[in-house]
Image 1 (tube, one colour):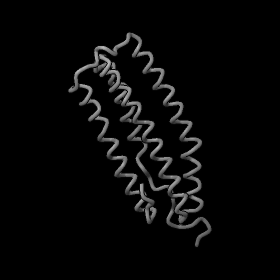
Image 2: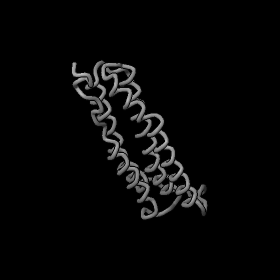
Image 3: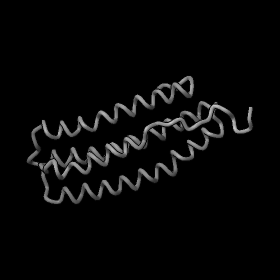
Image 4: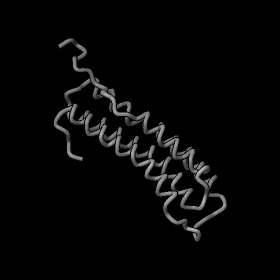
Length: 148
């Protein structure tokens, strides 16, 4: 992604990207319903495996939040005019949204494995709700902390 010229440009880009990810989740559900199943690749413990993978993914989401996103937000608050800080913030946001999308993709994988919509629905909902929580907010103030 090209480096934005301003913080506001970066915020608008992130909001547009967020919207694309929000729209993608219902499309995953539609694809899960509309496409034929892969009956050759089904296995009995798929539900347990995908639940374990989803839990591990959430662990990594919160780890990424703590180790990548929060330091980027703090750096952007301290130096709101630093282009590198804006880039770090954008990278952290993209990483988080991408990881959250995996929750919904686990639902799609379950549907492709031949499981029911009721079994995949919690994955779709978790991905959708977590994506909604990641709405890109303005994390910098327009006035510097020292009053200048």
